[in-house]
Image (cartoon, rainbow, N blue to C red; front, side):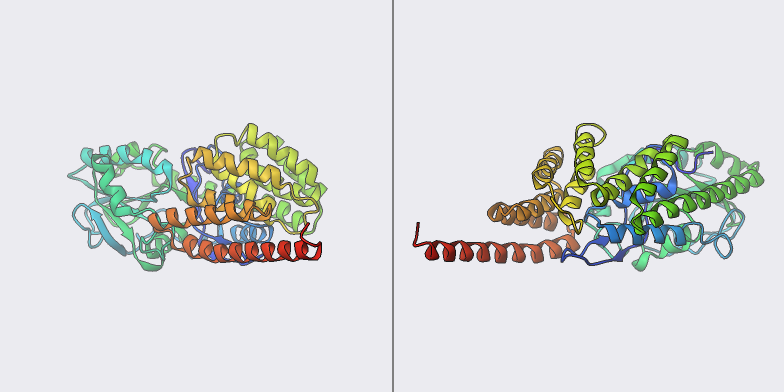
Length: 427
């Protein structure tokens, strides 16, 4: 049984760190999984967040995963437990569902506008909703929309998104209540960190099944409706999934501990062993390797970055942007290769057609480091304009602050140049 299925993403709660004046934010995470395993994907995904990470924040996140994942085996929820209360915010589509009533089967999907794999599940949910319209109620809840407080105040507007989807989302759709009420009381208590995730609730309002919609959901719902669903098997599968997650936590912790202790060779060797033993981990460990190399062996890190930009990351703008930002923000680099950072930052912007404000923000940061202040200012202004259109409030605030810093740096640079010219007699 796969712990994390292809076509899902993982997320973790929001927290903040601040280093080097950038105010890096560990925000809701969104990244497509392609068969990698869960805890390592958390780290891989975390390194792709739109406000890019630094070393200390990654180590904080690794600790968060170790402590948080699997933390609800005791007081959490699982198969045959009563379904949590339904506490949603706004209903974007369909007849509002005030509460879960006995006598009906419910299929509840958690999704996000930024999680592309969720789109693939909508036709299946619509099919199930039509097939079982007399016996089951299918609905979806949008969670962790970027830039908000859990009440769908993010950069991607769920209401507009749902309207655009039309008949592909042929079922009621709601948004989370403030402070992630649904995410906390359903997903976190069930120890689930992937999107999309579906809960199937039986006629007694108890949890019959939890998992990815790609894992035979149509058959599962039909069996629950018919009263023939194998709850014992579902319980065993969920238990096995949680055990596997704990094993992964231990492996992740070893790598992160070695890194934190600056035992770089051992950390890289541990990554090599994991990649060889479990090839499905390889993609999730790429970012770990790159960031460790930046501290341990800069030339090797830059060679690795070039290989990734030409190979695995050649069509992945988020990853490219993350590598460029890491060169700018990793402390203690002896010879930061800003030429490389500029090259891959431009590659990221080209792939996203200069429409992703976070990629442009990274480009602005690189220009600042190379003392191309005019371009840094122009890029920052462009990022702010795009972020405002997308209602990405945290990024707007962050970039407005950086813009002022860029302007002050340009002013100081010009004043210094003018002073040096005067001292040299104007020559």
